[in-house]
Amino acid sequence: MMESDLTALDAARMCKALGHPARIGILRQLLREERCICGRIVEVLPLAQSTVSQHLKVLKDAGLISGEVEGPRTCYCADRQRLAALAAALSAMLSPCREEQR
Image (cartoon, rainbow, N blue to C red; front, side, top):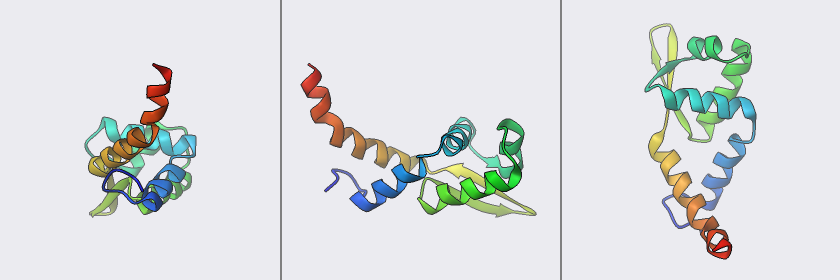
């Protein structure tokens, strides 16, 4: 069992969602800004709107980001609490590796 608030299944889903370079790029962009409109992500990354939308859905379904409808657009932001929980779970899981390197 993971040593955080995440279940092993939650952590696995989040890691799987991060398994694509475009999603990592999108998440990095969302972490740089407090909020980000989908259209702005398209301006920053060399991806089509439909591709960005598909990747945003995967990230949202995994619980890594949240989206709120604001007028005609949806604004997305990184779920920093969930990302911190994932980082803690991975750190706890990998801590034996760090100890072996000493």
